Length: 310
Image 1 (cartoon, rainbow, N blue to C red):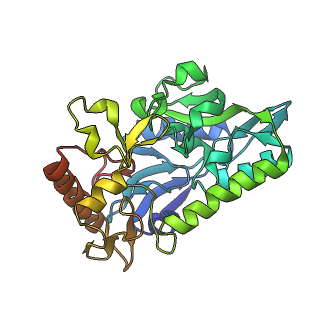
Image 2 (cartoon, one colour):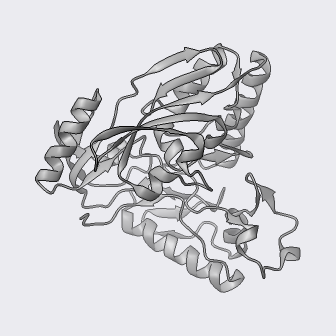
């Protein structure tokens, strides 16, 4: 177990203090032992994937962070079982080499498989849940391994049972893919990667989209005529939050070292050694301005850790 690990160095936002304790368990026994000890000593626990959608507090995390290693990678026909810690960017070329289709939408997606499952990550009309056959997790309350099929994972828009319950560590998942043409698959993946490079502010540290897009179905009294030109499938009809923010005139607005990206306003970027509070202030500003202009309440897609976890 490591001590005083810099979260700033681990985070794609390059923001955050230090983790008091940090563990990279290699198996379930190490996970179980760490969980039991943390609970006995009343030490706060946090399970970490790729730290690509987290805003860490400036004063760090006074608890134990568990970051499982990637582990399993096995193929059986058109199915692949992979450890939760494997990066999506590592998984894609492996399934491509076998001519397996189903994950093309994830081209350029940051983070780990476990993180994608927890938040049911999605883009370009695809979602993580589309390929899930089974997820294996460790229940930190019951100290036992649980296996769930897709229907038992309670997947919904950018969420799952693992996110709503918050007491399980995703260990591995089996993905059901399908045979495809390697050249076609590669072109689609590269197309997604290039789109992100061109449209997203990758030149600055960021944690991707700050807010979820707005499901049209959530607002029965919304004047859809006002948004008909921008509504897109994600995978159901949504109003892009980037459009709403742009319409408020907040592109390029900064606070401390953080800025609402002029390139893609649903991104907040770290342009000058930003602190967590700088980002929080911009998030609050966006929520107020969008609500005042459109009567729409935005919901964060990223995870914001409290200053003093309990």
